[in-house]
Image (cartoon, rainbow, N blue to C red; front, top):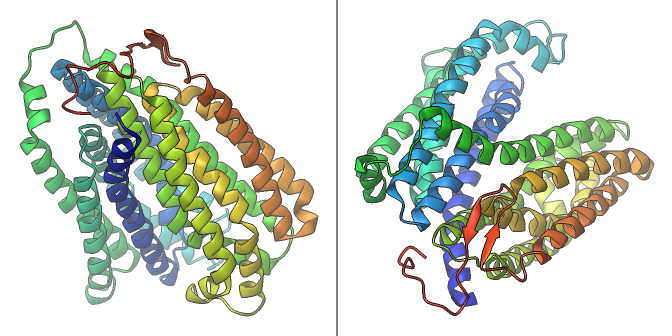
Length: 461
């Protein structure tokens, strides 16, 4: 298959994912602003980021397994992958939803910093009230993640985008209605979030029922012995490294805030604003990553190892986006900070940080996007180890270089990411000469056709 065709398929899969992620980030920031305005702090975003890492085990694992089974045109395997995702959802959701509700007050106390937060003693009951609805409602958030994972594995990334836009649009419309019109305060913000997501989830179930590939899989008789526990274990083994990768990056970002705080108050504020501005670029990198994961898994399922070819196109796309981000930040950093409402010392510090961030973003783009090839082929355990080591190194370097201010932080991030890129490049070179029968890093045997030989299973390629 030609390079242009790989690139076209990757772009076709990636751009809906980008708008899905961007819609979620935008709505999350606005929803957080509502909650913070009411005195509850940024509890929504902080906790949901943590819980997203939990359900990624089911969502990401399901995506890869469904995509691989779809490439092999194995209806029984598709059904097993779908069942595995839902079994994990059923196991995890009660623990989080019920346990979170019962522990809502201690959790609010922890999130607000152990002293009621910056808003004083009133913040604790407000955050607790928010959690009393948001944590039981996390069942909807988790279910939506599984639905998205199934659809993406089946090759449909547009429907998750539409569902995300629908859910987040409803949340933004319902927030002022429940908060102001019905005078429900932070409870209104939580109700709006759960209702918006519930409507989108119902629409997602309708799409699942109508999807031809998934309906055929649901009706197929199993061609191998299996059980619900085996399906769940397979999904968990596939998705856990991807979840660990996400959690490691999130923990590293939170720890980096503490290091930046050693520099000064203005720098902390600038770092927070610039990080939100960075989402516009980094979401594109993660979109390409998901596209690469889906594409790689599909072709491997069809018996075609084209990881090398896909990787080249991923690097081309991500590298171009990273370079574009670098040039944009160099030219428009002050205007970006102004657009986010910063001024004075905060704006100056943020503009300097953004201008120094370009090399790191370019390296990050290549690392994040190329990681999708390994996620789709079973190499995510090694990828998670590289990420964890890279985050630890980044924090150590940032602490050492923090005396140079935000430029020192940027240098630490770039150096750590350069080493991560070197590590993943070494993994990538190992795919250069695939054998007739190869094994992915999870031990799954993959039959490989020669690049120029026709494949009878190419209609999904």
